[in-house]
Length: 334
Ligand SMILES: [Zn+2]
Image 1: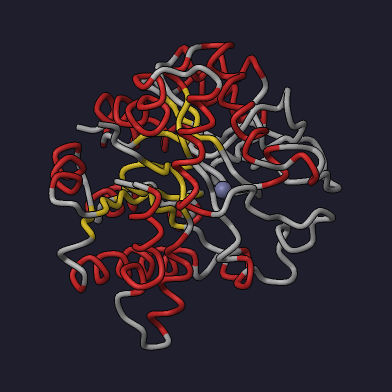
Image 2: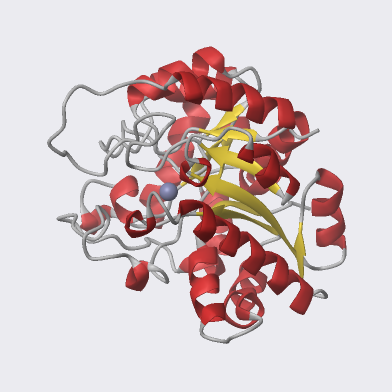
């Protein structure tokens, strides 16, 4: 049976805000029913810090989100488990709990202090997205749409050290959001399988946040995988084509290009969180309004159905739903 993993979900911002207002068991109440209905086993829970808190509040906001997840797991100990290794993930599934894995979405909480990476590891962070769609101490993110800027750069000396340290600790390097120059650099310095947790194919939807065919081949050559993103502008250049079938087209494209063993899920669902995005943020000021092309985690069975209709065998579908992700985690985690 498949181990179904969503490789990228930003729920902790919402969980933290609701907990600040005094609510408890937010995940159990607001999210768990959908996870169950969709047959989700594990969630990679991203730690994301909005522009408005940077730089000074980056570390504090990240730590708050980590605390919130651990508190939620205590309150809902029969239903939620924070997972730090493969055994934890398998145990959670066996006990019918949702396994949560922490990931940094952008290294901003570290600012320029590499020693903090160890602290995040000890707190359970097992994956690290080097940048979000902005510049940080590691490198440059790829913007969602064109901005006025000077020459773009690759990753910094700090970025190289971060990759080395993260791999030494056993963290997975995630290249979603990095610019093309930085991508090339990561491929040069990373030794372990690399993932793009929530990026699609640029050939099918031409945005800098998606991967070129060469980049897909580069990730595949590390043994890594790519999580398919369900947000409209990564799925299609036109809202009218932003639907489940076009999402499956991206899975198909990668399967044909490098093999089904490099395809996974990283839905990046945004609908529940858009209310929190600050009005000045690059997300809020985009011309095209972001929306999810499928109705959240409950739609996973529709993806399975659609893949079957296209001739994917059960074993291939299981790889896409989570086994590929598990393979990478097994290889990189200590
Ligand atoms: Zn993202």
